[in-house]
Length: 307
Length: 322
Image (cartoon, rainbow over all chains, first blue to last red; front, top):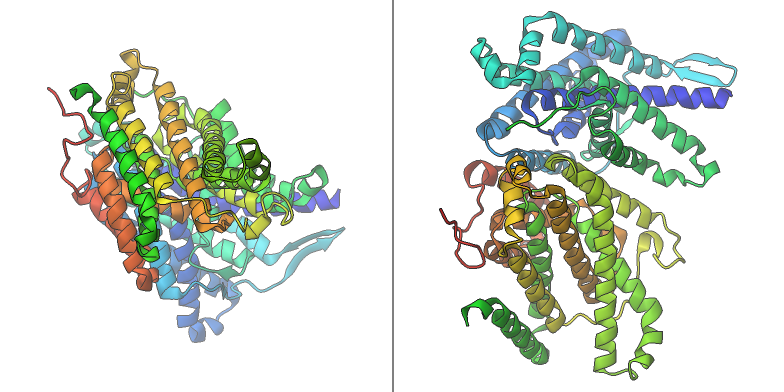
């Protein structure tokens, strides 16, 4: 029983990171109706930015208590990646507005590979140890359960960011504009919304969340490399589709489901004949199942394509 | 006479490839190898073009179907050919050739079945889902092959070794010619108007009574079949195959060829296959920059010239009538 609870908790931590990345996919899909393949690479850049900042500011940060330095690194990396997301949209996707969706999709794949291989050239292909931003403190270690400080921070940050996002989307004018644009781009322009600004803002917001996800992921699995974003990125995309792409609470829910399912398969799959090497494929099996049985996702609305 | 032009072209192409194949001993082995690679890439690119170009879907997993075909054909050759060849009249050119042909077709059929299984759920929806599912399928195939036992028929992470080197100039270019012929006649037929209609506007095509899902699945399964054939040819050319050789980057190479050649232009895609294969050969020393350049090229192409590098040629493409 304890082991099961532990697995469930691990799945929850893993899933909350997928949820953070999935939000970016879902928001961009909501406003632009396309899959931003490069999102997983912004996640990778988030981890690398934190790594770089930690090196750069090592002297200053060492003097501070760890929560302060963690917050500084987290916020600074999120800001940098948000700026990067906005630049990517401006250079690669904006020239393609109103072009066939396929062209935008191809560009997104190009951007993704460009970031990965430029990263490989710049940082090298080898794995690097991620600095210990959160000290290794055990918070709970009773009755076979163990929860470290890293886990608490991962879950806490995720919940905080989800709450913040909900506030932005539901309570601010920008959030209102995002929802309007997602509902009908032409009508939102007619109501005085500057669609370009809203799209840039959405990319910035999504990229900031991906960067936070990258840092948390690297804190859980402290080794980073330029291709680390591919797998979590794909799984987070599946999470977004599972929850109903374009639907923000759905993305969070989907992330948790994928994380927990994956951890359980990793933990118990062997006893029912699934080698742990196959747990990487779980997300894709889920994706195929959703596409067959409920393409609109768990919380998504059925959307009819209109002429 | 005019209505048989395509068939005559096919026969001429088959004859020429047989002729060159007979003389292939006098060709430098290095250039012959490049030529064979060009041929395999033509099959891959032209078949992917049926899906990505003519039908307007987006598959990112062509290498996975290639892998299925390569493993299917190689396992058949390694396990069954020894028993089959005596039945066909002993080890001779005819018997080995027939056994090889059967192996290739089996590889292609395995790939086509996988194509149907993958395409059926994802093609009921719009294009972007196919991209993700095929990308995922590419990963799954690699993971499954890598997790097989090293002693089993799949050879585990090290793959298969000692596949007989059956692939000759004739086989590669004969199948390339057949592939071009099949794709061109599918697209240029009355039936084939459906593919173009699905690409141009799925909703409108559907309301004109075209079964869009069926057209998309047909294109995808045909594309997978030829990818499987190309995989079989590749396996019997290299004589060793491993799961790592059929990763996403291999799929991406084919996508780049199709996009540079121009989606929906068979002649352009053939030209791009030749150009990029030869270029890759000369740029081996700059391997770490290759992907950066290719991805940048893809972005720039989409912004500046989405119709491909070549101007649209009348050759192999139906003229746009008013």
